Length: 130
Image (cartoon, rainbow, N blue to C red):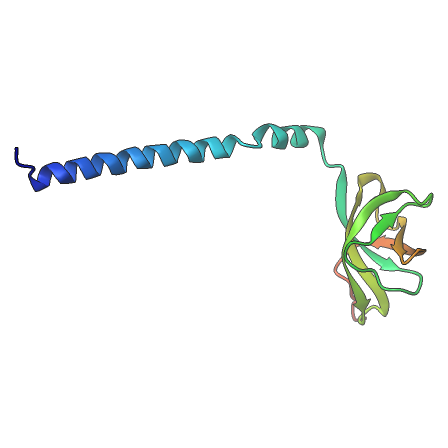
């Protein structure tokens, strides 16, 4: 029997349609992956917060340094830090446990076996002109 071109087109369309449906099912399944985890996190609430801080002691915070509370317990981690020329102090940002995120809170940055005092401040880091 002869195969005409319209039959080939119809078969190709059917294959393409099946392929698309299979991909669509995969996409919908991927949307559900992690859904339970995300909903659980949403229900539990935020446990840490991104804060800005200024060092009161001499030193420069760097990404990955630990953030500590008064007792030396790890409460977070520095995400970025540098010397802030506009404020004349070392500054940084990091995630801390929610209970240590209030403006004015004292925290410490672990820098080469030293604890450097820092204060939680509101970014951006600059002194406004008077």
